[in-house]
Image (tube, rainbow, N blue to C red):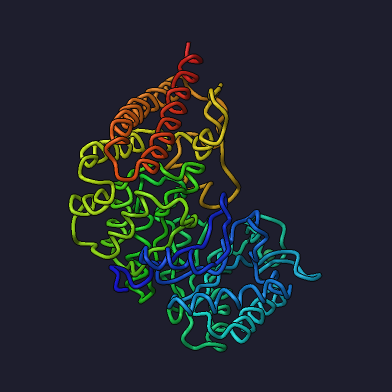
Length: 451
Ligand SMILES: [Zn+2]
């Protein structure tokens, strides 16, 4: 299927619903959505469904058998495939995970080389070097090799060695790198200097990581433009599957205008050749947001209004006006919601109601991105003392979001009886009501602490 992107990468299942059957039915649904490349595992830290996460897991024969089955199944439906690993992971045998240790560097080069000999039909590989179980020495730490040597100076030769290992086994393969947890400056410097052959970047659409509404930030646009100037292709990651790390466990929160916004920003960003679903895809959850994804990748230049009509059509003309109203109100509610209060604020959607917060929850880690750029995206990182004006601001914005979620629920309620798909609209309504209750409860809880 022709799409507006060279790569549309999907994941079978997602961390909160790891339905990883790779059945004909699941793959047919992903194909119909316009996905042309499949990631071979969910690749999430807590290993949903016990899937292989790192190269080391492929030492176990049952994972090897499962991946061969998946590759065969993907090819049957005409998908390309992408392996996804974190490295360096420690401890590897009895050596450290330090990338300046020649045993670590050569060990991973050997593993990647052998991977493509064992799985010659896999097209590409994506690696990340800093997150989940992969970690890098700090130049301010006590590693005798890495002390005083900046991360970018260590990563460039390491990544080039991994590229060499891949292409010596499969000359057509590309090594895509996701620079999780690095600072903007580190990523710019690496992309400015690294050898571009057989190398690509897969980038989350914002360095803030879980701000669905804040798409293609200045870091993303600068890095994609730099990469294009060096001949390095970029794939942008976002949430297209209905659920996502920032709105989990909600799967039917219908805000197709925001999906369009995300895809359109990626499509028009300099240097972007593809999109990748970040969290995962579960066909049983497919609804309005995934419908917008499918409509957009087929006709990226059609415009928001025309694509919303395509998405609304299966619900029938009698429900159309109320649904469009509800979806726009939900999109506005998402934009008013104070996601930027803290990385952890979104977790209130996972908690039982009512929300009771004394303070905005703090969240920050000792990584370059957190100690540098993410402070520019979150009002609270590791400051337990918070000014009442800050808490008041979050409460007020949560109230604006709540009002719009409530209006959206009312519009959906009015659309159920007129809709050709009443069960789907009922699910949308239930979830938007939950979002409304959480938002209002957050506002009330913080307001109660103000004076
Ligand atoms: Zn080290």
